[in-house]
Structure formats: structure tokens, C-alpha cells
Amino acid sequence: MDPDIVEKTKKTAQLYFKDVKDDRPYDLWRAFDKDFARDLSLFITGQVYAREKISHPTRQLITVAALTVLSRLEELRLHIQAALNVGCTPAEIAEVIFQTAIYGGVPATNSALKTLQSVLEEKGLWPLNQDSD
Image 1 (cartoon, rainbow, N blue to C red):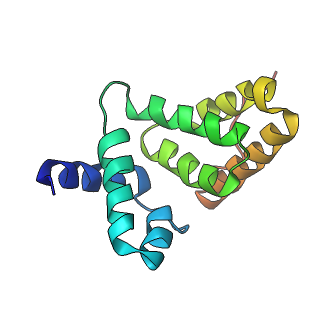
Image 2: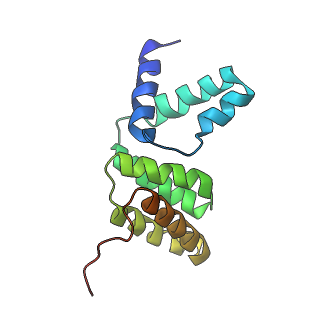
């Protein structure tokens, strides 16, 4: 096993998922097959998410968009938390979710916004401070 990939996996997982209270996919995978869980984690977190071709905030906003369009709300919840952890603002995350309405439909957007609101409430960031229009 490549020690550099193991270190990148640990570093990236800590960056993205620190303070996440929800179940993480890794824990689910590990409950069924610890070796396969390790292999998936090393690939996804250590090789894909750790790539430096785009920034972590950009990578997480892309992930939020994809999960919104696919209506994968449990995974979306995890990646909204990761997006906040890497410095994305609630307004940026909301804007990405709004953008997906064109491609995934308004119902998917509404469900994603409810998920975002729930995460923000848990973190004490809701309601948002918005300027009057």
C-alpha cells in the first residue's frame, strides 16, 4: 500500500468530514467489508478528492450540484457539510443548488435546499443574514 495515498486519504478525509455527525459512507462500507472499505476510501478520498487540479471548494460545489440533480439527499447532506468545511459559504452552496433547477428540476432543487437548511440549522447558521431586496 502506497504510504503517500494513505496520508492523502487521511488528510483529505479530515479536511472534508471533520465534525460531521452523520454516518459516513466509509463506516457503512466497513461494516460489511473492511478491506473493500479501505480500497474505496483510498481511491475516492485519497486519489480523486485529493487531486489538486481544482480547488477543494470547487470540487465540493460540483459534488453538491451532481448530488442535487441525482436527488441523493443523504450523500448531499454529507457533502454540504464538506463544502462548508472547505470554505464554501451557504450563499455559494444555495446558488449552486438553484443552478441545478434547470437540469434536475425544481423538486430536486427544493429537496436540496431543505437539506441545506437542515445542515445550516444544525450548525447554528440559519436563518441566513440576507440584505433586504
